[in-house]
Length: 232
View (cartoon, rainbow, N blue to C red):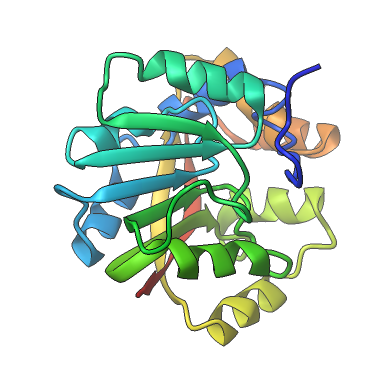
């Protein structure tokens, strides 16, 4: 059994199928639209960057190319091992096995915190928000990248897979906590149909995945997201 940090909230896709999730990471946002949008709001050049829910560390080298220090946090021990292996040659990167609600970093030590498709999904993530307020220093910023379930076929497939999800309740939560938002029109671009189909099958319920595959010709699909942020 893998080591799991206490209090972790399971991720149904990367925890069980990290190899397929790696394909998804490679496919998502080839233009780095999300990264450009974040850097326009708060640069991480020379900064201390915290990646919350870093998984196998896919984004850590990209942060490390600009940042002074990069800290990855991931509750799943096997994924932590993969992230450490990925970043073994990068002296300014460290990866910890921990949760968003119990970050292993000092008070006011982070300039930029980023969570991509991890933990900060709305109601219930208040402990993680409190931790962000503790660790992000004045002048810093926190970013959350998440699917926009109100837009496009991807949002429709997600809503059919998770019918209890309320986009209105999620939006009200973030407004109440003082976060701002910006739509992101991302896309996924795959190398093969097999890769595309494998990713859709880890993202959606079986019958929805088959519908999504049938509705998606070629190797590309729109991936509507939202960037949420808060300055500290």
